[in-house]
Image (cartoon, rainbow, N blue to C red; front, side, top):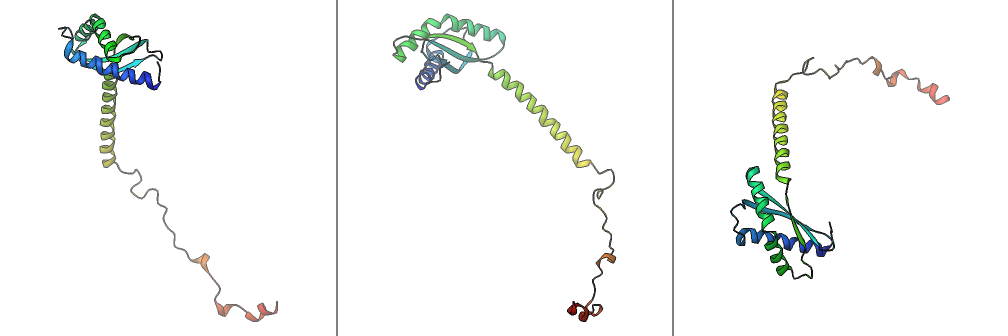
Length: 162
């Protein structure tokens, strides 16, 4: 699909026009609660893909798909009048799988959050096997290695002669 500035503007306009049509003009009883999520146009502006979601079960999704398919001509002519381009793009409708994958991700994140809470609760009750100070080395106080000669023990005369 094209990513040029013009094709992006056309895609955005198609999205707005189709959403407006589904909201007001098209009165098909099969049309469920539809949300237009995205529209994409090829670089040559010949083909448009409109992505939508439907609130409801599989039966409502298939009924909405049939309603969109039957209203495709009306939608295309309205898009052509609004866009004012030389060639009106053909329109295809695709059920957007994003909400289902988002639900799956949400459930996975919830499961991970619950596991984190369990680990956090276990951590509060946990103790070290060898006690609290298991990794601290006991300090041995032994000053035998710190014997420094005192001034009176040094023979200063012998040092000056050398």
